[in-house]
Length: 292
Image 1 (tube, rainbow, N blue to C red):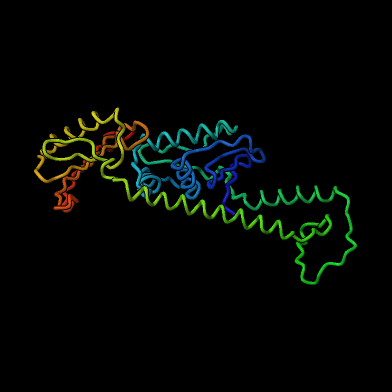
Image 2 (cartoon, helix red, strand yellow):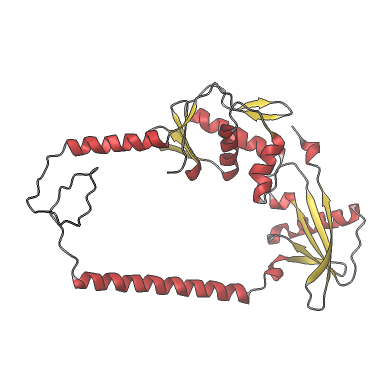
């Protein structure tokens, strides 16, 4: 059973479901983002120890190929505090250590509650069984029958499936398998027919084609081109015939405005088949200037 945590004997943190809720109250469940879930797991695993900001950047974002920033981290911490407060816990839950990181102190009681929840469910089910009248079967059980001793059997032995029912079952299974194979074949065919590179080509800058690392909406292409031209000018990069430019900015790759401006550009030569061969990479990162 996946690990579930009980905070102060009132809030259940389920990493498998990306959620926090009140104990025994599914209707109170509040979903959190993947980064927020990874942050809370780190804090719980390191309870009593200050987790540094750089550790969060690496284990929550960088290890998953995502862009990390102080704004992203602060936003997730704020969201977790708000969720815990909404669920009724009014004391300080996540403590900020200025210029260092964050910590959940050892005074806060956090325990794994998978076994506790499972036991409560079994006890509730047992109470329901005890309240029902027992029905004794007069038929003798076959020697090879497997009996689950945790559940009392209270129904007559079922009749074997009819041949008609089995044929219907096999027919439905064959339809499902055929449909799945058809969808899979179409997906493969579609991926082979389309040209992914064409979807990423943005514009021409001089004699060079400008590409993005992810699709850019039509309404934002002019902003993307302007950022790329500014990057070329700032780094004294000139377009050479037969080369392509691959550019990305955190402004476009991050779902929220982080205030950080990390940008990357690769200038690549192409062979006779128009495939990139040798690339020179340029990278700027001013995240440190936005530390809070």
